[in-house]
Length: 202
Image (cartoon, rainbow, N blue to C red; front, side):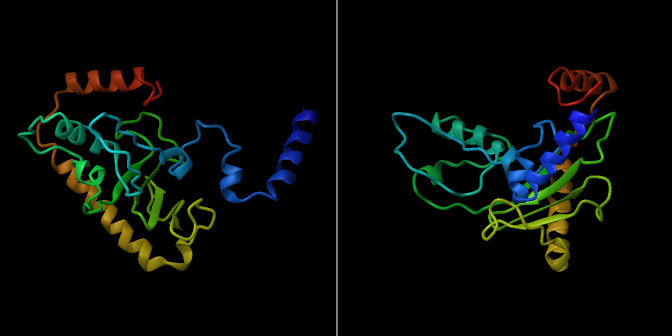
């Protein structure tokens, strides 16, 4: 017990000299988080038919499927989530779309008080508690603070309100696309699969 207390004091002393990003890097990876060190990963497409290019535009994992379909000349006859990124690969520009963020699936029997929901653009990231819009509110200026060290939510309330409105619209539009009713049996199968994959704790 004494060793544990001494270790905690030593950790707190070291943390005083670190930025918020550096402190977060010392936490366990199972922590619920919407910070970029958990979310921001490179997306690579490799082929003999693709020229080497680095793109810094904001993209989403839902963009992978329509992009692959375009690269192998498969026509998509129905509306799906995601965008075709081939224009970016060819050096052109496409309209940026904000990304909806959420720490956990919509179904979770044991909610975590750190569950968060938010939105990310190239310039800003906003997120807050899933269960209370006034709790755990974060806003980061990604252009000037790419490591998300300085939470500016309290000094930019109007921007928080704008991003909250955009986030709720993204959420509503996404859910409204699922018009087909899911039976109780199918929902149980989906829930069990999410548990098996570790997205939902039993």
